[in-house]
Image 1 (cartoon, rainbow, N blue to C red):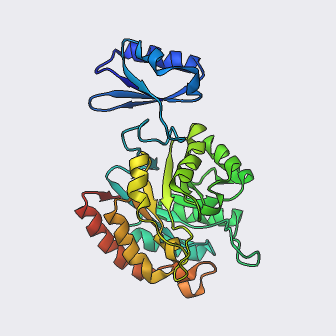
Image 2 (image 1 turned 180 degrees about the horizontal axis):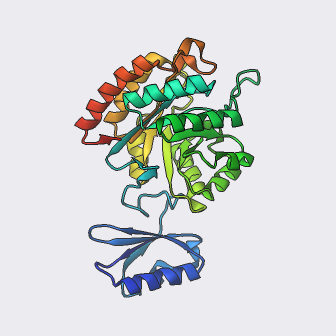
Image 3 (image 1 turned 30 degrees about the vertical axis):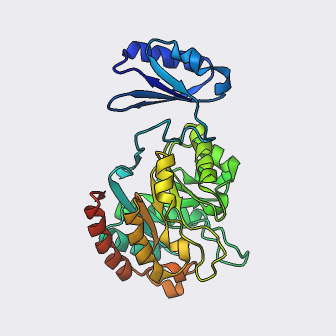
Length: 337
């Protein structure tokens, strides 16, 4: 339910209204705009009628939200959310690039790539320590040792790190990780999402291979319902009947998600097609459709990568792409960094 307050309501009355709503078992989200203040009401709103709230002197109107996602809904929170990652802002005029290898393979590899992507302008470092793979015989990552190597790369470069979690029992291992990634295969791992809702650090949520945008927002809702509002949505391609590419990148997801939700949206062009030469045009298109950032796989030797080398750029290719992306981002009136 959305409660729109009259202009310039007294703070004491607003606080009193929120306290009353909390007393009835609701959680609230207060959003102050230029002309109106909005209270988003989350919970079993069947217990309270909009007409009942409209009788309160500071309330202009109260309406129910028809969509099943509430906290993630732009109607509840008209202003864009900006997620802060150790001083790096994602969303609302800022464009960030997350780059690094699919998998952490060695200390030398991850630190070399980290230095390269930082030099080119990346603002966060990605790297997989736990890798969900289709084949049980494929490289599964270095696990806890991989996390330690990521932290070494962070120490060497200062870049915040982004890495994927697969198991709810691993949350404690991610205590020093800056952004926890929920991969496409775990987008509807609801026990994991609930646990991450209790985790006070940013979550990067990837869209599932065969999931709708509404299902993605409902997964974000699981995290936000637990009290963690720092969610970054990531479009990484969905499975279609097309066989020329690994997935089909849904560029329409960016404007649609931004219309439906206040959360920042980034694009992963590497996983979208699984083909390295397609990363550049899709990255450029991502800027054009209004994405808040990119997630790009970069490896110092893609031909010898233990995971997803075919979709990885080498440092020189990434540097060339970044120079172009910077110009396009600036043309759109945004900033990197």
